[in-house]
Length: 485
Length: 95
Image 1 (cartoon, rainbow over the protein chains, first blue to last red):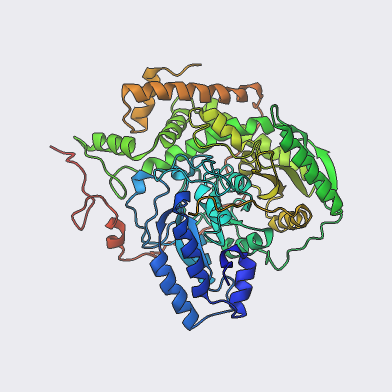
Image 2: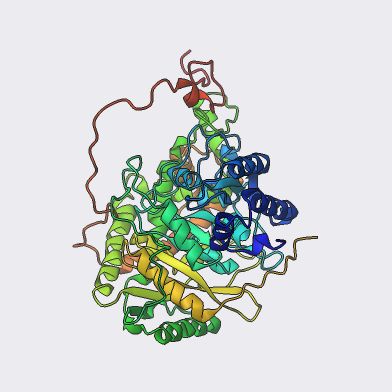
């Protein structure tokens, strides 16, 4: 089979279970393609040699009852992997080799998957274009010099470019859904507390969630089912009954009420996005669902709120990088000088900017004006959703206000970069699940995504709606393999 | 509101990030445009709103107070930039 890397996760699992393919066949195919795809810069660290060994071992004694039997998988370099370098895209962690495994990746390996390597991302997941990584830009498989989105840019590029069958990313303000939208794949940000944060390099603890990224909704559901678990090692992990999301997946969404929030019709939004949204509305209607106009009145305050809450939490979380216990250390004349030089040389510009914002809003005299204010507005934003969910089962919006942009286009203007996340950030602030599915192309042929937002813990419902829509949309990603010589 | 160079110097001290003049000026410009954007929140009246302090509306679970990780000193200092096998080493603090 020459087209192994074109197969979906579901197909690969089936073919391994039916013994039409071995884990070695599949692992080799993805390694070969990954090696040919260096120009995408999707990997920070590869573990190909050991992946092949593990695949051979699996084939000698295959356990075909597992959910991911012998499936190779690369993961975002924000997940700590035991004995494999984990950098978070930062110079400050360039030499960090964890002595423990994140719960989410542990769940994946326990179901039989095999680590291919660690994928590039924005430094500490702070960015919307994968341009803040210490390890350089990631290229989009859609077009040369196009950003794949961020912060899970390497993850998006690797799935869309077929370097890995599926992957996991993390989403603090849109870091799974925005790159998924930019590269024509599916990305799910689960409910806060659904997937353990243990062993994930922390950015903003009240917003961070791990989630699956895949070629299609069914693959996404399967991977979500593997990674979502209660974990006593994460104090905000929530103990609720989790579904067999892939088994219970159905395209029957008849009678579902889907809210269309008028506040997502923002000034200056390209007509292509509006048209795509209208098409989406028609698709859900064609599936037998009902759409209802709703209002989320505080939507426009979400981004300013996020840019207080997230940097505040980041400044506190990143205080641990002091050059003492792990990571990069710069030489200093004394202890304080060592701290200051380590952090100045070890963190990139965007991370420093956010630490500075966070430090400022938490500093004496400004706490009430900024941080407390933001927490209050965050409550209003959550109330908006609570109110809406009295009338509807889910909400349909565009995923991003534009398609992907060129590398370098927005790096000099942080605010214009932040505006990318205008439709995804409210979901994190309210702790809700959201999924982005590819829904069309713009005039340049770049993918565009639609987002379905659900009630807390209602992943099954948004997966079902996405599944039904996917069938109607029949999206075909235009991957030309431009980077393969 | 405007963030001046003096404020940048003050924040950088609090954040323990050394910043030279050139960086400080760039940061002042960036932070001013970001805070201009953040000021939008002042349009909202929030006097009677309870702040949202935790998104997961659960109380923290209790656990028994017992040691679970034993003898992991080696693991803990494994990644330190400088150690003497037993301790993290830092520049001299006491003369």
